[in-house]
Length: 296
Length: 307
Image (cartoon, rainbow over all chains, first blue to last red; front, side, top):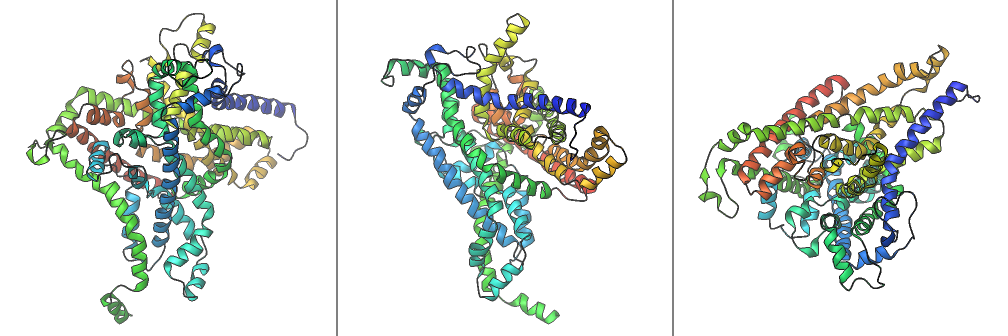
């Protein structure tokens, strides 16, 4: 790699590799670019096949119309709320359990750890799960988005592995100063674990934002509908909505929105938050995968 | 020593232990309620239960639901679909491995990083969005469908979204598109961990790139590859529900219906709670046995337990 001069064969190899990876890049990137240009094109002059590389008569009015649609804002708030609250709750429970499981003084430590890890592999099945949630009165409740995922066994293993790698001298000196377990957890362990907690935040927040099965199965209340399920419903009946938007009061400036543009714009609204935070979260989830790869 | 042990046993919990238990038990309660408690629902599989009725009024039917599940040809077809889609999905690993090996041979670090960033992205979007994108690109008037039509010069008889012959491959392809880049991160990490002296020594001995990959990189990645493959075998019956819920349609349903979707359709759409529960039970049982035996195997290969 340190050689300065590039031989002809090497050059050929590099060019082939670059072509290969440019193709791969396009395969992974173009779909996102496509929904982006479709969502900002003028709906009247665009069809799914006429648009390829550049937006046609760029406009932001599609977004305005989509956000005026009934329920989109509310769903956005619900999805945001479950992402923020759900992530904080998961973070708290998971890190606290990870901490206590590293403390030798905890009674039945081995049992608790096994109990938590085995839960990763036990799946009662969709219907038994559904019936249990219903009997716990979690049907049509916001809590069904938060509580079932409040403890992630996978993240538990990540955090516990990380805490075990911290030098124990830190905890011991705090204990000599008279600190109790909770203040050791809160004031020492949590700040030190920030790198791995960031990975947990990324995994959990993405999972919460993208989650909709719980909504589909257990929440019929429109006020609690997540953005993902709203998108799915719009996808399945985009034709009706577009005609509604044409005849209803939503259309202000007389330009209509087609089913195709409508689908693409809602998709963009749902994808955008991920695209925006993605560059910032990349280094954290890579760290999480590394630790996960070592410990499983 | 013995006396100390005995007196410790007799004592009540110390204050520290109480605090620790207080911090532990809420989480343990959550696991119990949301993971283990639903297993109590397995009892439905032994009754002729209908939603809305009481279990005590339902007839006990023993193993009839299990017998039916194993005798039904459609269930066997669903299991077949599940296994085929899972096994083809394992191509994900060699592809991710190849991406990592080849990309790490590229000299331009900015290009490397850009490719890595973009190929990881699809992993972070939901199946609903994948469905939306696929719908835009592959439906009858979709961009790629019309592109293929203009290249071949004839209108396609069926789109990828509703072609029974290619439905399984299409599902597997989408899955690989979504996850291969993400899986390659682990291999990148392993490659960075290889001792550079090995390569230097090989260069001194006159080994070219191909020989370096063949005799250093690939053997170093093999344990990782094996362990990941073994983990995937453990989860072979779990294809996930969301992908198939989005993409299923009447034309291709019997081609891509997998267990995770089948138990949903049985239980939620046809209200056959006992049969759906029985199928889930068998699935979980097989999965647990697979995971634990596979874990033993991984221990032998890697000297390290996966669980």
